Length: 265
Image (cartoon, rainbow, N blue to C red; front, side):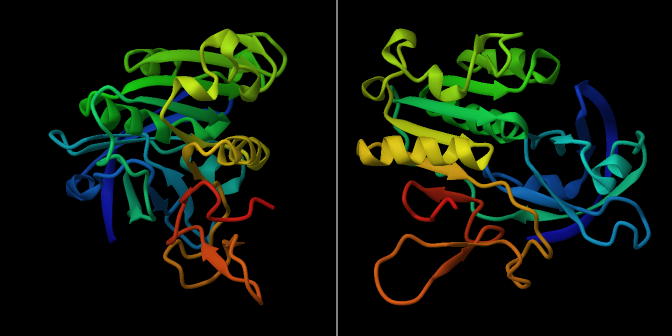
């Protein structure tokens, strides 16, 4: 983990309230594991006070460029959406435990499931899996067509199934509606599942496929204070027998966990 300043290359809106931010700097060369995140200082003063955790969407080590895709939801990310090319940006990272990829074998089939702003980290993950000869299928879910992003970029890495809740793009419903034999995506068709997105989606995936004995990894989205495991603001309970509750810190023990490692409450 390092702290440093990078320079904004571009910051453009790509969907409804969704922005693509590209930065460059020496610090980018240390960000080599998909699924990790960075803690971004939005603004130059004390308002907003806390940094914002943003997942790593892509890394170009040769050009020392990092891509983030974020949703301009609250005060901090709205401030971030006003950054312009050439402006310095203070970041802390890479942080957290990312997705495991080194044990993947040539010819395996990986299912990557993302919901909303949980989609971006699955792009860099897909690139790393493809290098290892893994076949990739994406299932990405959004509320409506105006919120869809990264569809074309993901299609360069594997098959893509888009799902929207109102049916204005792709299949109408939830991402779990596509994980059936009708789409060639029942549990017998893939070897490992990686997912990031809203808690109900992750809970449904873990409950279904952990019970089926499938290998799977979930990345949790969570508000954070420090981002380095000191403030205990982002803990979640562990699924372990015995007396007393045990917890994991999402920022430092995660954000990626194996199926069954934590309770999704």
